[in-house]
Length: 453
Ligand SMILES: NC(=O)C1=CN([C@@H]2O[C@H](COP(=O)(O)OP(=O)(O)OC[C@H]3O[C@@H](n4cnc5c(N)ncnc54)[C@H](O)[C@@H]3O)[C@@H](O)[C@H]2O)C=CC1
Ligand SMILES: O=C(O)CCC(=O)C(=O)O
Image 1: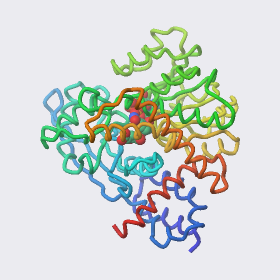
Image 2: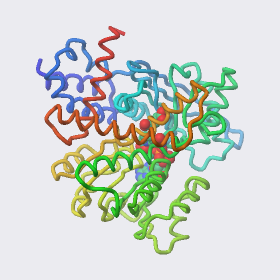
Image 3: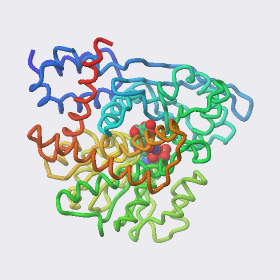
């Protein structure tokens, strides 16, 4: 069977065995086709049936989470943990609490995580989890009770050398605290079972900042490769959560001007540059809508999604040199890509996981826009989580500067690996292929070494 026919067969199996899991199919489609040059060159991957094996999670845990709201009513949500691949290390990846979470979303995120984690050069396997619980509008006590109930179900499957969850959308330091507290109460173990912990009780300096900072470091590497820099660049950032906020912070530090941010309800365009302190106050401390930002900054423009009949965001309509999609999957579509190209955007750097649709990616490539794929560009978060695990294991505490230096160096290594792999496979500068092939090769070769497990 030809390599192409083999890929089609594997994708067909995914489609028929995982009906409706469109995000997972999308992620698998992108990765498998990008592997063609490697699969043609090395027949071992076919012989050892790697494509079939690597697209099926090692373990999928689905559980019911019952919790009591502030009115004493019992509520029910789904909980998930997809332990995708442990060939190169213990399962590692975040938890997402959002009403859209379902098995297909968690599988796509877990699948991406396998290759991302391999690309970091660190010994971490891939997993992801979460719940369709919506933290928005819930009281602190409700969130605590939900996290406790979630952990009561999850704890038998995780551990510091087994599976180490972390945050993602809707799961930040507050939720990690409640999850950790419950794990400790049940197991009576104070161990590095979660990352993204508060500094006071085992967290790492710079983990909070790491995904956003790492994304900017990655963009800097791309720009430098082509004789450019961040200095003076106008940047559009989407999202206003953990990744977006620290992307904005680092962009300022590196001489760029971030002019936008967004949430699920609307977009802020602040031509003179986003006011980081008020953004942090609104989003990190008070969990308010971005509408509040426009109330305190009359020179900023707020456009609610209700402004457009199709409920779209206008963030990619804003003229910019660089785009940092940092909110969620498939948030940048073909129409958006066309706007970016029309406005002369030179680089799209993915802070979120799979934020660019396949058609938009194809268009950007055709138009010669540089592209930092999420698996590489947002790997700074999981990288620093592994640094947190190292500190926990050795009871060490590294300074902010020490962690930041390591993060910056690892982002450099990730760029070099993806770039050099693109050269090796005759697609110089195609970092999507470079990242996928190098991540896959490390995991697949380890699977071969370890036999039919
Ligand atoms: N937190 C981390 O360390 C990492 C996160 N990521 C990815 O980055 C992305 C953002 O995650 P976080 O910042 O951690 O989550 P978060 O929960 O802190 O923030 C998410 C932000 O996106 C906004 N949002 C959600 N849906 C939206 C939509 N349809 N349009 C516009 N805005 C929307 C939310 O309002 C919120 O401001 C996700 O794709 C996540 O998987 C990737 C690597 C690591
Ligand atoms: O820090 C981690 O373990 C995981 C971060 C994450 O979920 C991601 O990279 O998408």
